[in-house]
Structures are given as C-alpha cells and as structure tokens.
Length: 418
Image (tube, rainbow, N blue to C red):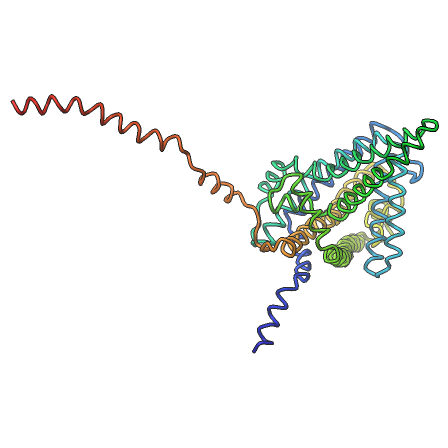
C-alpha cells in the first residue's frame, strides 16, 4: 500500500513533463495573432529604415541592412533548429556563431542604425511578449484564457517593467566596467600609472567578479524576466531579483528545463514548418492540375515551394503586368503563412519560459503553480483598506447633536412641571 501511494506522489513531484504543454499553449490563436502583429510591425519598421538609410548590405547582397539580417536570421535559425532535432550540437553552435558574427559586424558598421532598430524592436517585443506571457501564465496556472485586448492592456500597463528589466543589468555592467576602464586610463600616466594599477588591482578584480555574476545571471535569467512580471505583477528590480535567484539557487534544474524546452521546441518547429510546407505544396499542386496544357503561367506567378525555402524565391520572372500583380498577391499570401511559422516560434519561446518560471518558482520559493496575480486580488486589497476619516467623524457629529439637543429638552421639562 505504501508503494502505491508513493508512486503518484513521486510522479506529481516531477514537474518537467509540464513543459510538454508548451505546444498546446503556443498554438493558441490569440498568442499567434499578437506575435504576427509584432513581426509585421518589426518588419515594417526595418523596411522603412532601409528606405530611409538606403544603404546596401554587401555581405548578403540585399537592398538594406534589415533585409540582410532578416534573411541571415531565417537561414541560420532554421539550420540550428534542424541540427538540434538531430542532436547535432556542433551544428547548432556553428549556426549561432555565424549569425552572431553577422550581427556583430552590422553593429560595427552601422551602430546608430542598429541602436535605433534595437530600441524599436525591444519596445514591440515588450508589449507583444508581455501579453503572450500573461496569457500563458493564466492559462497554465488556472486554465483561464484572457482575451487579446485584456492581455495587451496588461503589457501596456507594465511596459516600463518589461522594457527596463532587460536593460538594467546592462546598465549595472556598464557602471562597474567604467571603473576598470578609468583605471586603465590612469595606467597611461608615466611611472605613476602602473603603480596605481597595482594598488587598485584588487578593486578591479572585485568589479570584474561582480560583472561576471551579473552577466551570467542576466544571460541565464533573461528568459525569466518577462514571466516574472506576468505572473507576479513584479516591477523591474523584483523581476531581476527573482530571475537571478532562481538561476543561482537551482542552476542545474534551470539548465535541464531550458534544454528540454529547446529540444521539444525544435521538434515542434519542424512539425509546424512541415505543416506549412504541406499546405503550400498541396495548394500549388492543386492549382497546377487546374492549369491545362504546357502552361508556364503558374511558374511565373508562384514557383514550387520547398521545405527549406517556403517563399520559393527562385523562379521565372513574370512576363506581363497581370502576372506581376498576381505574383505580388500570391507572395503576400505565402508571406502570411511564413509569418505564422515565425509567430509560432515567438509564441513558443515566451510560453515555454513562462512555464519554466512557474516550475522554478515552485522549487525555489515553494509557491503553488496556480498562484498568479489577478486584478481581483488588487481590487480586494484596495477595498479592504480602512478609511478612518468617515468612521471617526460620525461619532463626533452624533455627540455634538446630543449636546445641542439637551438644552432644548430642559425648557420643555420645566414647562410641563409648571
């Protein structure tokens, strides 16, 4: 009997199977719509900035900086996820390294452009990612499905916390790194500089150690900052504190959850991409069967899609203006399908990290999985606060009325006695 009771308890104590609920959460229409809108806004902003700057991204042969980064990200992300499904970790590392080199080179060549774009992108991600995390938190904790407008209203209200949480660790690192930088500048002074470096070297090592601690916590705990705000209505510093404490309290558990979510997400991505490819391929084949004879019209309007290239960029050029317009309209439809695939990646990322945050919070803080902030709790807290002023003034007013009424009652008693 004891073994039969211990078996369910042991299964309930294993929280990692709950990560497999991420796919069901990620394909919810409201999350996909929010992510798709975010992708559309980011892409539109990048295209507009490319038109304004009008510079060529020579390494990728594209017409703009954003176009080159976008195509490089799509290529290397797809290859990295496929390699992850095959458990080819060397391929994953190689694709991530190549993409990081492209991004680093772009920042070096166009710093102002990249800073502006990062700020715009971060602002959009804060609203969209915060809304997705909020929906995932309520759905995972209590089975509730808040509306799209309600989730966006929450992320807009907490925009400051979402925006500053990822930037605050960077500010701390920059502030502490400034001390080491100034010490290096002082070292340029002849004879005195090297002596000062030797004297203040322990402080420089302490600053570097703090930078390392914050850097590890920021990189490993970055994924938990948005869920902390969505789950507990945290502010910027509380979100950073929670993410850092969970990472350093249970680092191996955090690594296990993240690795499991990454592998499962790669498998889900391949499935979603295959579904999108099958959708486009069946549509293309059906249209091809309808076009009679040896007609190359469809090839000019829409080349045959491939699993590795859903947009099917390679094909014959349109022959006239009607084919050109038709090719543009078909391209927009195919682009919407590809955008949904990208939206699934974004939705899965925030949903998985929300679940991981809930599991880590349960292990570190012993907080129940269904414990999530709601507006009703805030309303109850506000209604429960006492309002002392009306309660204190009412007894005083009654006593005053009694004292005022007593003199009026005495003449009546004397007159009745007479």
